[in-house]
Amino acid sequence: MEAWRENENIDFNFYDAHDLYISRDTSLPTTIKRNLRQRMSNAKQIVLIGTPEAKRKGGDGTSFLAYEIEIMQEFDLPIVIANHDGDKGVDRNFIPKPLLDTNYYTLSVAFSPAIIRYALDDYAANFASSDKSGPHYYKQSVYDRL
Image (tube, rainbow, N blue to C red; front, side, top):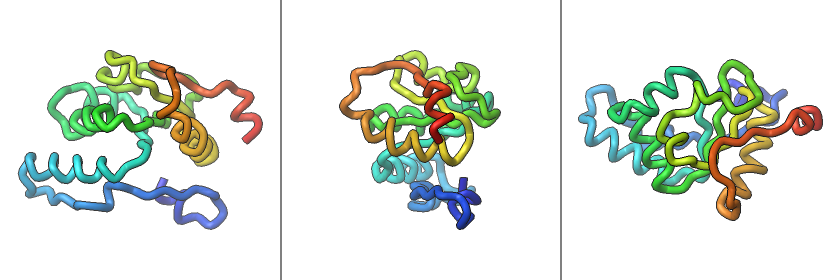
């Protein structure tokens, strides 16, 4: 995603909250968690790269990704799941269990700059006023328009 942002031929830009409050590998877990919470407090929306490893770590209850998932829900942030394998639908093998268990309103898209940008502009902008729950995805017609 950073390469897309740096490529002048791709219309894709984002602000990476992980660029703030950097933790070092030698930081204590409490320091890392404090920094993660601070980063997330500045976030308006989240792109989670959907992979089996993200599902596993996001649901293990002990990893830093699991902590981030907890904070995302606490802060009620819109979460776009960008399926790393390019799948355009909901792939429950990529969505961390806490999001599925709480029926959290997420949007799954293919890992592609155009649809991720569209989701951040469309889904994320309407997230707070929506009464939807659980995982969702865009129909093929949305991809065709892009």
